[in-house]
Length: 397
Image (cartoon, rainbow, N blue to C red; front, top):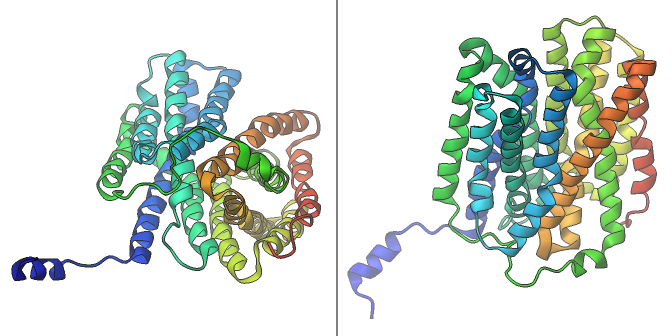
């Protein structure tokens, strides 16, 4: 029998409901996602100084960017498989510290091989976080899954938009060797995650690794992968070449060109949130169709006009383009709920990374021959193919 004092003690303890716990987990994972993607977008903020310090060629600088894409994006399926199989939060907990430390210590790298190795290790932290955190972000929250997944996704997109500016300010104030201060948020967040993530991650399951559930839904999963790939081609090419395009072919100052990129990325983060909310009300298929077709006229306005009207077209085009970030992800996870981490990695990191590795160099090659305006305008038409592809999704999706 429980004593009166013990009963009173139990009664005095606050009862945390599953939805409350779910929102608490979403909040901390979204906050961590902001900084993880801030680190993933940081390299461009101080890469010119690394080039000057080490006397790097443009090819060497490009290889650093490729190494970051490889380790932070293309390796995500590996971490998705591992996090689905082993019941440990360490894939998520250690990620901010690893990403923050190795990215923020690049100013101390004594040589190019050290730079390359540290970029790979920093990217590994980014890759480790995404599959498990994405699979668990909305667990325990009832209703409006698109809205709450959009909160998680948009926090990362916003972090990626702010990353270059954050490190540019840090370098400007403290110098390249002092950017190690940028690792402090990552270390603090890892500590907070370690203290707060007590329940086991729901996506994890021990046992023999099997791809049978993935093969069973390979057709619809392939459609979602291609839709994410198309969106990522446009988004990554714009994110990579926009400052160069605005400064070289639109006569923007370097600062104004950077603000143009921030405008585009910030509206993209807002687009992910709006798209998730709309998907809860009108269905994922309809939102994908609106996104793929709706971004085209606004991107055309950006290329065909000038001044504030052109920038408005850029912002609204980016907003509509990124409507689908949480939508494709949730629809894919529902296909294989027992391997949500693996699906998340395929539809985020792998699709994102493969799009960048293939189309960023290809767009640069086209730009060398025909100019950045022609190259980026050609890329911006790709969502039309996505619209036709999205029409193959089930009507009730």
